[in-house]
Image 1 (cartoon, helix red, strand yellow):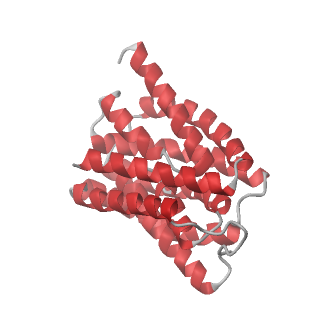
Image 2 (cartoon, rainbow, N blue to C red):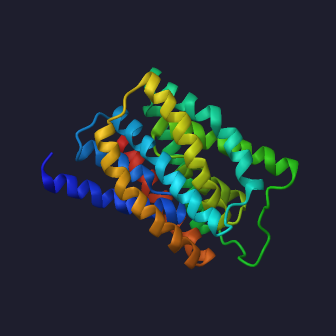
Length: 251
C-alpha cells in the first residue's frame, strides 16, 4: 500500500469510529474499505474489522458509563444473548458460504432503517425500560441475533442491535449505550471464533484501531449533545446506507 491509501484508510476509520460512538452504527463501512484499499480477502477483512471493534467498545462503554447513559437492565440481557451466538456466527462464516445469509441480514437492516425513518414515535415517553420478564426475553433474542450477525458479517453487534431496539421501542440513547457494551462481548466472542476458524491481519487492525478510538470518543460526546429525534434519524439513515452497502457487497 502507498501512503495515500494508508491515509485514506485512517480517515475512514476515524469516521467509522465517530458513527460507532455516536449512534452505534457504521462499522460495516470499514469492511469494504479493508477489501478495496487494503486488498484483504472478504473473510479476513470481516475478522480484522470485528477485532478492532473490541477496543472501540471499551472506549464507548467508558464514555457512556461515566455519563450514566448505560441502563444495565437493558444491557445485560443483550450480552447474555450475544455471548455464544457471536462465536457461532464466526464459525458459520468459515464453514459455509455466507452470501445468502448476508443478503438476508442486509435486507433486515434496510427494512429496519426505513421503518424507523417512516414510523413517527412520540418523543415524550412510552419507551420500553427492559424491566419486565417479557422485555428481558426480547432483549436476549435481540442480543442473539445481533451477536450472530456480528460474527457472521464482522460488522459489529450495534449494527443489528440498535435498529432492532429502536423498532421495538427502546429509548435511542439507551439503545446506543447498550450497544457500546455489546461491542465488547460480540467482538471478543466473534474474534475467538475467527482465530479458530479464520484469520486476522493484526497490522491493519492496529492501524485502524488508533483512529477508530479517536472517532469513538468524539462520537460519544456528540451523542450526548444531540436530540432524541436526531439520534433516531441518523441511526436510521446509516442503517439504510450500510444495508445497501452489504447488498452491493453480497450481490
